[in-house]
Length: 215
Image 1 (tube, rainbow, N blue to C red):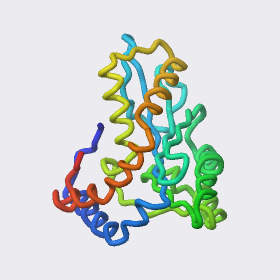
Image 2: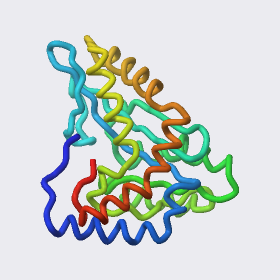
Image 3: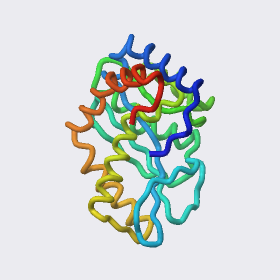
Protein backbone atom coordinates (compact mmCIF):
# COMPACT_ATOMS: atom_id res chain seq x y z
CA UNK A 1 0.00 0.00 0.00
CA UNK A 2 1.11 3.58 -0.63
CA UNK A 3 2.68 5.25 2.40
CA UNK A 4 4.09 8.76 2.63
CA UNK A 5 7.68 8.89 3.80
CA UNK A 6 7.46 9.01 7.57
CA UNK A 7 9.18 11.75 9.57
CA UNK A 8 10.15 11.91 13.22
CA UNK A 9 7.27 14.32 13.85
CA UNK A 10 4.83 11.87 12.27
CA UNK A 11 6.24 9.03 14.37
CA UNK A 12 5.74 11.03 17.55
CA UNK A 13 2.15 11.89 16.59
CA UNK A 14 1.44 8.22 15.88
CA UNK A 15 3.03 6.98 19.08
CA UNK A 16 1.21 9.52 21.27
CA UNK A 17 -2.07 8.76 19.53
CA UNK A 18 -1.68 5.02 20.05
CA UNK A 19 -0.93 5.51 23.75
CA UNK A 20 -3.97 7.75 24.16
CA UNK A 21 -6.32 5.40 22.35
CA UNK A 22 -5.20 2.26 24.17
CA UNK A 23 -6.36 3.94 27.39
CA UNK A 24 -9.91 3.99 26.00
CA UNK A 25 -9.77 1.11 23.55
CA UNK A 26 -13.40 -0.04 23.94
CA UNK A 27 -14.51 2.95 21.87
CA UNK A 28 -12.55 1.57 18.93
CA UNK A 29 -13.69 -2.04 19.13
CA UNK A 30 -17.36 -1.79 20.20
CA UNK A 31 -20.26 0.06 18.55
CA UNK A 32 -17.91 1.43 15.91
CA UNK A 33 -17.74 1.80 12.12
CA UNK A 34 -14.57 2.44 10.11
CA UNK A 35 -15.01 4.06 6.69
CA UNK A 36 -12.56 4.72 3.88
CA UNK A 37 -12.54 5.69 0.19
CA UNK A 38 -10.37 4.10 -2.47
CA UNK A 39 -9.83 4.42 -6.21
CA UNK A 40 -9.41 1.20 -8.17
CA UNK A 41 -8.00 1.40 -11.69
CA UNK A 42 -7.05 -0.86 -14.59
CA UNK A 43 -4.36 -0.68 -17.26
CA UNK A 44 -4.38 -1.50 -20.98
CA UNK A 45 -3.96 -5.20 -20.17
CA UNK A 46 -6.95 -5.16 -17.81
CA UNK A 47 -4.86 -5.53 -14.64
CA UNK A 48 -6.44 -4.02 -11.53
CA UNK A 49 -4.48 -1.78 -9.17
CA UNK A 50 -5.08 0.80 -6.48
CA UNK A 51 -4.97 4.40 -7.64
CA UNK A 52 -3.85 7.01 -5.14
CA UNK A 53 -5.03 10.22 -6.77
CA UNK A 54 -7.39 12.61 -5.04
CA UNK A 55 -10.90 11.44 -4.14
CA UNK A 56 -12.09 14.71 -5.63
CA UNK A 57 -11.01 13.73 -9.13
CA UNK A 58 -13.79 12.76 -11.51
CA UNK A 59 -13.96 11.66 -15.12
CA UNK A 60 -11.01 9.27 -15.01
CA UNK A 61 -12.00 6.76 -17.67
CA UNK A 62 -10.20 3.76 -16.18
CA UNK A 63 -10.95 4.19 -12.46
CA UNK A 64 -13.78 3.57 -10.05
CA UNK A 65 -14.04 5.36 -6.69
CA UNK A 66 -15.63 3.40 -3.87
CA UNK A 67 -16.46 3.94 -0.20
CA UNK A 68 -16.18 0.96 2.09
CA UNK A 69 -17.05 0.45 5.74
CA UNK A 70 -16.45 -2.31 8.28
CA UNK A 71 -18.42 -2.27 11.50
CA UNK A 72 -18.94 -4.03 14.80
CA UNK A 73 -22.67 -3.54 14.18
CA UNK A 74 -24.84 -5.08 11.44
CA UNK A 75 -24.32 -5.27 8.56
CA UNK A 76 -20.62 -5.88 9.19
CA UNK A 77 -19.51 -4.51 5.82
CA UNK A 78 -20.85 -1.88 3.40
CA UNK A 79 -19.63 -0.93 -0.06
CA UNK A 80 -20.77 1.87 -2.39
CA UNK A 81 -19.68 3.15 -5.75
CA UNK A 82 -19.12 6.91 -5.66
CA UNK A 83 -20.25 8.10 -9.07
CA UNK A 84 -20.05 11.81 -8.40
CA UNK A 85 -17.34 13.96 -6.87
CA UNK A 86 -16.61 12.94 -3.27
CA UNK A 87 -17.56 16.17 -1.49
CA UNK A 88 -19.46 17.18 1.64
CA UNK A 89 -22.85 16.52 0.08
CA UNK A 90 -21.79 13.06 -1.06
CA UNK A 91 -20.41 12.18 2.34
CA UNK A 92 -23.46 13.49 4.19
CA UNK A 93 -25.64 11.26 2.02
CA UNK A 94 -23.43 8.26 2.85
CA UNK A 95 -23.67 9.02 6.55
CA UNK A 96 -27.44 9.47 6.30
CA UNK A 97 -28.19 6.32 4.33
CA UNK A 98 -25.44 3.95 5.48
CA UNK A 99 -24.04 4.92 8.88
CA UNK A 100 -27.08 6.22 10.78
CA UNK A 101 -29.04 2.96 10.27
CA UNK A 102 -26.24 1.08 12.07
CA UNK A 103 -27.33 2.76 15.29
CA UNK A 104 -30.72 1.06 15.03
CA UNK A 105 -29.10 -2.16 16.24
CA UNK A 106 -27.69 -0.75 19.48
CA UNK A 107 -28.62 1.33 22.48
CA UNK A 108 -26.09 4.13 21.96
CA UNK A 109 -24.70 6.15 19.04
CA UNK A 110 -22.43 4.44 16.54
CA UNK A 111 -18.85 5.68 16.70
CA UNK A 112 -17.49 6.69 13.29
CA UNK A 113 -13.80 6.58 12.40
CA UNK A 114 -12.46 8.13 9.21
CA UNK A 115 -9.16 9.63 8.14
CA UNK A 116 -8.12 13.26 7.83
CA UNK A 117 -9.37 13.84 4.29
CA UNK A 118 -10.74 17.44 4.40
CA UNK A 119 -14.28 16.44 3.36
CA UNK A 120 -14.62 14.37 6.53
CA UNK A 121 -14.08 17.48 8.62
CA UNK A 122 -15.84 20.08 6.51
CA UNK A 123 -18.23 22.51 8.19
CA UNK A 124 -21.27 20.93 6.53
CA UNK A 125 -20.29 17.41 7.63
CA UNK A 126 -19.52 18.49 11.19
CA UNK A 127 -22.90 20.25 11.42
CA UNK A 128 -24.59 17.09 10.14
CA UNK A 129 -22.81 15.07 12.83
CA UNK A 130 -23.89 17.56 15.50
CA UNK A 131 -27.51 17.37 14.37
CA UNK A 132 -27.39 13.56 14.57
CA UNK A 133 -25.27 13.16 17.69
CA UNK A 134 -27.89 10.96 19.38
CA UNK A 135 -27.28 8.33 16.70
CA UNK A 136 -23.72 8.95 15.52
CA UNK A 137 -20.50 10.44 16.90
CA UNK A 138 -17.16 11.03 15.20
CA UNK A 139 -14.32 9.43 17.14
CA UNK A 140 -10.90 11.02 17.36
CA UNK A 141 -8.34 9.44 15.05
CA UNK A 142 -4.70 10.50 14.79
CA UNK A 143 -3.14 11.73 11.59
CA UNK A 144 -0.95 9.32 9.64
CA UNK A 145 -2.77 6.19 10.88
CA UNK A 146 -3.57 4.74 7.46
CA UNK A 147 -1.83 1.46 8.26
CA UNK A 148 -4.04 0.97 11.33
CA UNK A 149 -7.31 1.65 9.47
CA UNK A 150 -8.99 -1.78 9.12
CA UNK A 151 -10.63 -1.00 5.77
CA UNK A 152 -7.14 -0.75 4.29
CA UNK A 153 -6.68 -4.41 5.19
CA UNK A 154 -9.72 -5.18 3.07
CA UNK A 155 -8.31 -3.29 0.06
CA UNK A 156 -5.04 -5.18 0.50
CA UNK A 157 -6.78 -8.56 0.68
CA UNK A 158 -8.86 -7.75 -2.39
CA UNK A 159 -5.78 -6.79 -4.41
CA UNK A 160 -3.99 -9.94 -3.30
CA UNK A 161 -6.95 -12.02 -4.50
CA UNK A 162 -7.16 -10.11 -7.81
CA UNK A 163 -3.50 -10.81 -8.47
CA UNK A 164 -3.72 -14.44 -7.38
CA UNK A 165 -6.78 -15.02 -9.57
CA UNK A 166 -5.28 -13.10 -12.52
CA UNK A 167 -8.49 -11.04 -12.69
CA UNK A 168 -8.82 -8.85 -15.79
CA UNK A 169 -11.38 -6.16 -16.62
CA UNK A 170 -12.30 -4.32 -19.81
CA UNK A 171 -14.22 -1.24 -18.63
CA UNK A 172 -15.39 0.65 -15.57
CA UNK A 173 -18.59 -1.33 -15.09
CA UNK A 174 -16.63 -4.59 -15.33
CA UNK A 175 -14.17 -3.18 -12.79
CA UNK A 176 -17.01 -2.32 -10.42
CA UNK A 177 -18.41 -5.84 -10.77
CA UNK A 178 -15.04 -7.31 -9.79
CA UNK A 179 -14.71 -4.87 -6.88
CA UNK A 180 -18.08 -6.00 -5.54
CA UNK A 181 -17.14 -9.66 -5.92
CA UNK A 182 -13.77 -9.04 -4.30
CA UNK A 183 -15.33 -7.13 -1.41
CA UNK A 184 -17.98 -9.77 -0.76
CA UNK A 185 -15.41 -12.57 -0.86
CA UNK A 186 -13.11 -10.73 1.55
CA UNK A 187 -15.63 -9.32 3.99
CA UNK A 188 -17.04 -12.34 5.74
CA UNK A 189 -18.48 -11.62 9.19
CA UNK A 190 -15.62 -13.59 10.72
CA UNK A 191 -12.97 -11.59 8.83
CA UNK A 192 -14.50 -8.22 9.75
CA UNK A 193 -14.89 -9.21 13.40
CA UNK A 194 -11.24 -10.26 13.50
CA UNK A 195 -10.14 -7.03 11.81
CA UNK A 196 -11.72 -4.91 14.51
CA UNK A 197 -10.32 -7.16 17.22
CA UNK A 198 -6.80 -6.47 15.91
CA UNK A 199 -7.06 -2.70 16.49
CA UNK A 200 -5.55 -2.87 20.03
CA UNK A 201 -2.61 -4.98 18.85
CA UNK A 202 -1.96 -2.52 16.01
CA UNK A 203 -1.84 0.36 18.50
CA UNK A 204 0.60 -1.68 20.60
CA UNK A 205 2.80 -2.31 17.56
CA UNK A 206 2.87 1.41 16.78
CA UNK A 207 4.11 2.08 20.32
CA UNK A 208 6.66 -0.75 20.19
CA UNK A 209 8.02 0.56 16.88
CA UNK A 210 8.24 4.14 18.24
CA UNK A 211 5.66 5.32 15.74
CA UNK A 212 6.89 3.59 12.58
CA UNK A 213 4.48 2.00 10.11
CA UNK A 214 3.35 -1.46 11.16
CA UNK A 215 2.05 -3.00 7.91
